Image (cartoon, rainbow over all chains, first blue to last red; front, top):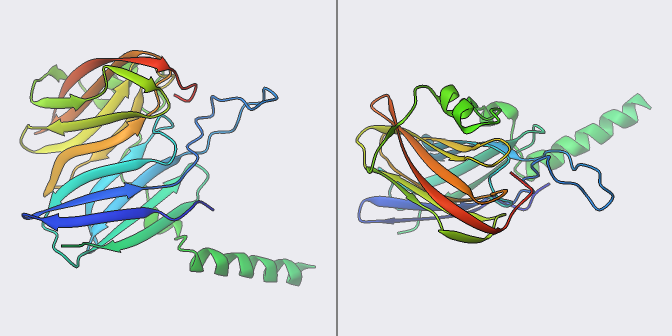
Length: 104
Length: 149
């Protein structure tokens, strides 16, 4: 179980800025441990971010996205008080989600 | 024995629900994973569609020299109208296509994140706008490479 997703969302001048941190090992499958054994790939494959249940960003990640992926982007149409939801799923079938309220 | 297993599974499920883990259905993959398996830049580009046209309306913000290949900051901004997709490729990584974004209407076609770079490489931002692909590349030197790719 990964640490919780962190979301910061602020609305100003008609634009909502979202910053997301998703704790995850993001193992590429190309690295070896101390005894020379390949560490199996374990990385986030899909991310969906919604604002009040409307999709505002979708992403497909490969294993080259850095450990503990962070992501920032902006969208129009949100407001202070809107609910941002982030859901990810990884190559092992695990999923995690978090929600945050947009601040003014 | 079976009953005990059921109880155990029930406990695990309850834990998953309370800790915010969601059903697979809710996190359904929506962005096609086209090109992620390609081992070459050309292969990945072919998977995305046509060969992208070079465009100075695609802005790619990377470091000229990245001290840490495990976390190189990358920012992409498209000034092209009706941008619906942003992809970033690292030519020298084992699988060049690193990430694909779908940009719904209303979302600013700008994303910032960090990538692993196995070694110094050309980084390419590819955007789809009005159905066509446009790209801009920059060279990034990596001081300490990530074996991650």
